[in-house]
Image (cartoon, rainbow, N blue to C red; front, side, top):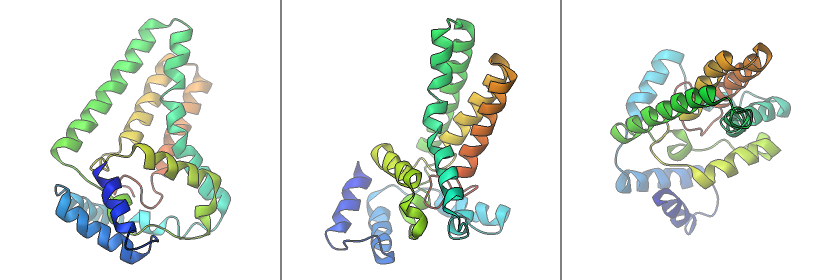
Length: 206
């Protein structure tokens, strides 16, 4: 909520999302929001990948369909965490449902404890966002509109989306048929690759 308020306050002076807007927003964040580990994670990002992939992925993606596929894969995370438990519940596979929900809640709890102890705000809140033709894509808009509704500052690293997607894929491999397990695995990969888009909630790998 604090982030939304500060965001809109900056808009009273700067009406667009120019570099000046993001610079002022970052300054106000540093004054209002508790410091995070962004410099350390950004340094780790450079050490591992040699560059910030979130700064090069979208500018280097010239095909709209590639961008849309990645953003659809990332948005489909919400389907991924909802449909498998629902299927298990409807088919009365209680043991499998308990196993999936327990492991998923354990992953979320672990991520949230890390967020509390060592918050990372990420490029989505602290860096200038990509502005180009790919932002006109339907799934691009859907992803950012969805995140703007429920995004929480300080939850950039580790990515709970990627962690949950991988967990469901691994558990799904145990409890579902092989074709379904492969499908869940591909979607988990899609979530991870979709996280490379600029301004997302993680520095590593983005």
